[in-house]
Image 1 (tube, each protein chain N blue to C red):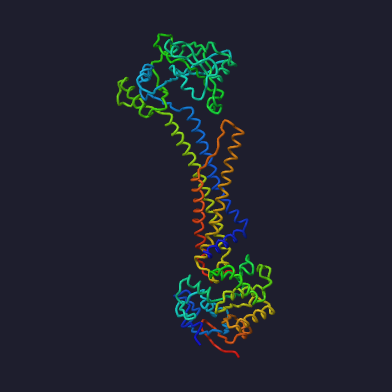
Image 2 (cartoon, rainbow over the protein chains, first blue to last red; image 1 turned 180 degrees about the vertical axis):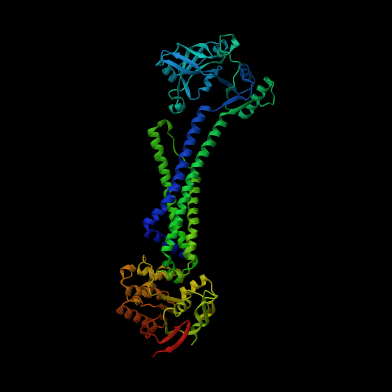
Length: 412
Length: 228
């Protein structure tokens, strides 16, 4: 044991007496480790932030899609809502897009057709003025709508729009609504994806007004390719969705034909996470290559060091150093270099991640997020860097240890 | 008296086959404890090969080497390291000090490999440096010392672990005449104090310091004479 301490001292002494070289060797490892840590920290942070934002938006939402020629009708949706427990609201989007013309100009817009529980979809907004439409509005097919404050400013230049008429032209038909409500975002950061300049404008209207059901002069839409349902939070999403699909299939007489499918928001979230994970992994692999290159750098320098110190090795062996002692000395040297490099790399990587996220949050507050790194990643990276040190140290160390003392001493 | 070193029919053959070189050809030699032996020969005579084998730095192709009762002719690399550490103190022509270690640290090296604890190691090394008259230079690096002083550090290193044999390979080859005298005096003193000294040289004048002179030529012992 005391012998081992001696070898540690020797290794440290040698590292310290070649400071510049040791630092340069370390640099490769530092860059490798710090980029792995940096990327993992940023990637995880971004993922957590995205997951958090999406979960506030889409929680409980399920999308039903028609995969074939069958269309989801308003009657289907009404049936589903009344017959399946936990289905609270449904929403369809008028397709194709429409045009809204105001004194401010012409805008692309969609009508969101919804039942009376429309407010349930406003998870990230709150009513700032007026009211949502009611069951009576729905049942009577009243031409009322509500929209976001920001959209009102775009359309009219102010938010004093309650009671004002608004026309949207869809499919060549002009639908004239009256604005009854305005919503505003609860949290500005959730507005990221909605605030770009040419974003379409969404009018939230009773679904009945988009449909011929009431004999109104509505657009000729027989059905929709997709619909979004809002489920109660205390029910089994999977189970409920399967029931919904079965109802749709029996109503459309296509049992077992896979005409309809569903996608819950949690599925989408999982898919997004997979994509982010893959990107993070990919970049981490690229960074790992630089770590590998750093390892080869260590090996290179250690080999040079062995050649340079051949004579010293000869002397040590003549004085009684065993193969094992020389091996240990050189391995400890490369091990120390990679270990210190690894620690520096972790610190620099974390520091860099926090610095970058601070810069991002200052420059682009909308994209702000906190980097996050797990202890496991740090441990794995440390383990990897010491393995690199040992692996790439073994060859030079063996080469040094196997030198015959006469050969080594003969070289002047 | 029992032999400290006993070698018998030692052969060392390089390039076995058609162009073989017999560096040592059937050499038999006995050295007793307390002797001061000079091994003399021209370059290429085989004296360096003999010194490597005596110093356990190399193994013979054939023959027997008994070192203080232990057969060392067929030991493993690691076992030979151990023998060198315990039995032999080397003094080289080129001093062979480690440049970035101080005099004291250089002298402590063989003690580290023997596993002597720090305090004792320091005491032994200081004692050895005192014997060679360098007690006031222990923290100097080799580059801060003269050639003669460097060789004295090397001698201190050779005796620090108190090995029974001092093996000096052309110890004065790189030194001026006054340093040479100094070093030879130290070797004499070491011999007086009971150590076995083996001196390898090509210089008859240096060899004349020894009590016994063994002359090597073409890998064979040509003469083995005792001085008075």
